[in-house]
Length: 236
Length: 79
Figure 1 (cartoon, each protein chain N blue to C red):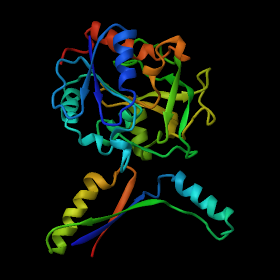
Figure 2: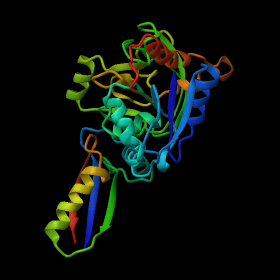
Figure 3: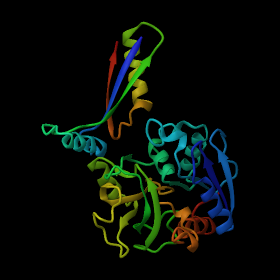
Figure 4: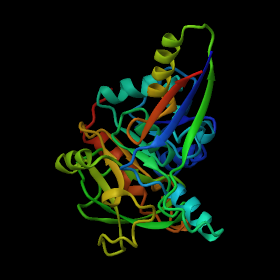
């Protein structure tokens, strides 16, 4: 299986994602520069964390106009699995590939810590190998991860089971204290209607080896590999 | 031709930065501060002298890039 990892000017988790896919999970992985217009032969696309284009104007606001994003949109439209991690999630929101928007963390501060998220749905290419309700310990590192959508849009998200990860306690319970940024409905990650595009604020690619404090993130990438092997996702 | 664009968070969106600024003002002794909302301000210089065209162009720019309609609203002034 081949992962394409997009590199924007200011990305800082691109190598982490590339390393996790290639060295930890033994798959092919290629870094793709944001000015490229083709993804090449890719079975899954990762938009990595960082500060694309300096996060000027708004997080992800400039990155969505990078030339590669047209190819990412086409890939997503054809059903190709796309994972947006942290800043990559913000780019997907700005690009309209996922609904909603991010505002500044409730506590205003940049938050860099390990948190727990509960897997809400396992019928996406990035949660297929999880069990329903599984709690993952993953690092977050963001200043703008406070998920917002209008009440009617939140209802639609819930009705369509598009909330994929929620911040929780280690035991999987939802609480205000376990929500690090004030996200509505404790949302840490969502998917699109077609369920092939997933975005989350925590960093699974930085939690793929026990020496990093947690290897719980591995299952997210393993899900994509399983989805590919099971041909849940077809070659696009 | 110059245009001014004011971008603000929609009333339904909590503004943590505005809250912090309001708290700081209260700490400074401005006890009459009830609320602060933080926004963005842009000055756009344009070629041409047609005000209605400028209004339409800058409104389009605000829709496409300067504001995120999910969380923000905007106001355009042509000078």
